[in-house]
Length: 428
Image (cartoon, rainbow, N blue to C red; front, side):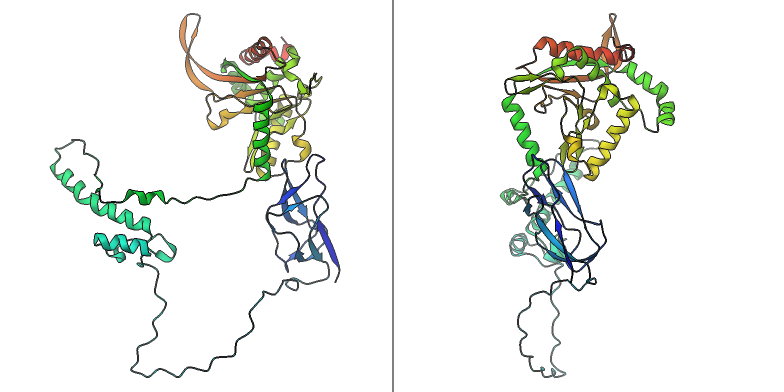
């Protein structure tokens, strides 16, 4: 037997421990080299643990949900065993002495009755309710295991029995096209029974707990204020519609709206560098580069991967990287490096239909832009009421280092860049 340890990979310096999610193999099953055995969740990313060698999974040292640290042994692989050989034998009670064979039943005796079928069988609480109302359990469809009639099924049958005559009488007496009153429930029905509703208590994942911690930290440590403005998206939409087909053919990626918002943000950050700054104790750090965090929803929670040096990226580069981040977030493939750093963030609640929000700053950054759904709205232009596709922008900022003047003018600069995209090319 040649055993090889499966260990927890190296974690980030800021991550002390992680949680095992779910083993994809059982002891005794064959594994191929580099086959993913389990995923490990930290408070930032989810890491995959591949098999270091082909063989058979011999033992699992740490079960699902266990807390582990870097380099800790979590399983072993037998490189010489065959599949099934390492499967642990289930513990069993000592075998009892065989019972003597039963004598055959006489021909006149009744056959042994089979185990009663669950369908039509009422649970005790349900049986009591049905008996009081004179309802046969066999006439009630059961939603419990094996078709058993539950208390909820019984209450539903009672309500149906009570409301049916009243509804029929009301329908017969009501004149044609006259709205009918809602059926009345018999006062004898104990509605308190509906208070017994199911609940499920689930511990937070490490990522969700970390998100909660950072959001509470942001609100407690930053002096958050939000400024708003509205943007006429028609110029951007016209530009996109005119070139989107050729853009996709040329660059192999669709031209979305996020690249415009990202470019408009960088345009404003150049004009007002404090929006691109961060706080470190009593110091303000002004960044000479533009690393923009893009909030992305994932099955495990909100993550903010970083677009590096955005001022040097083309529209196609931005769209391509955002698409890649979306796929990585969905598949849990984001690396720690993807989520580290950032000087400014953008959160796009509009993809979910949000009209307006007050985004929370991602510390230690000092500002964040909230983008929302674009909707046709009535606005006034040159004294005339016209319909325009309007998007409400919201920028939250840390009032400790950013004054209202810089925040408002910064958001206005974003608005002007979006309403006149030529400014992005001419740096106006």
